[in-house]
Image (tube, rainbow, N blue to C red):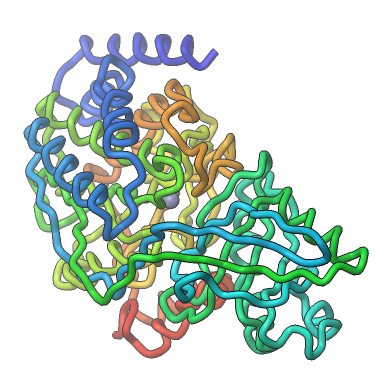
Length: 491
Ligand SMILES: [Zn+2]
């Protein structure tokens, strides 16, 4: 069905092209048709995921992905540069293993270290394993003194979809605060994914975390719980070998097509280049990296000249806390008044069903509608005015720039998120192709439209934060940076 839609829309778009040249609407139709035609979109994704593979920021594979992206833009005739920025701390997992023993039982569950987990001494760290329920205040109170110095096992519901993912993230912060306050030695999250998949879930404390923290395969975690429920006293030995270090240099890759009339005004479309290293980062977020590159390539190939400058941003350090896009906002401070919009695509290859406007919907609705007109056949599109942390539009929002996040169907994103099965074969190639046409229409529309809004001042950003973003910012521990003026607009 999706395939037929592709062909029909391409035919309609081509018919428009031959009618009359050189009107912006015709350019948009040509661009959409080009996106839906033969392009290297899928080949690029295959290279990035199968050849380069998982590319955690700070790894050698990540550096190769930077070089690869610069070369891809270059081959397309798009000017591109790798913009350096400082990552605060190196963290990569070398190996992770565990043994549970006690009451005549001994087994070795599979575990994955959570980002910024502390390592363990040579030979591992051993401590009693305790059932900490779902990590509520009552659960930890029930443990009393036994929580002190123990590894706390946290039960997790099965993850079904993206809302479930948000719940995991938001609840982690409270669980970790309560557990550390109770004096636990470390945290063990029961794997939430079907099929016993391991994944790398962010620790809410980020680089400030000082405890060993792991995800344990679901079957092993439930086995341990059953043993404890029938009176077994268990000891967990965790052996986490990490590659850690101080600050280092990473790079965002920024492709650019300069505006013909308003070169100092900017429209940004971005996706993060980095991934975690379990799996090959296909849904998160290789497919949208390939999408961003292909939009740039087709605009260039058709010789289209946008009025505003378009920047095609491949962010790094996203998984460590949106650090690349934050760095871009700092490095380009002098240009931010000219940024009219920054969009993020970061939810795999599920259908783009609309856009999240981060508090700017009333101002942008007309431009959104007009921009999406050439891809109306792929709609209907719905808009939300909610504001999210989540991905790389966030620091633009904090700087008062209108931020847009593609709102995509969950599809298979949640179960594969940051996990081993996030590989090329999970990507819905036809839908990705359709999404690339939607992305191209969006960007082209914004690059050429009459724009009636401006960058917000700090008070304006504060209103968006008060309107609901505050909850996310607290859960992800970034509110402090806004309040102390180190992140976001200060005037
Ligand atoms: Zn992502």
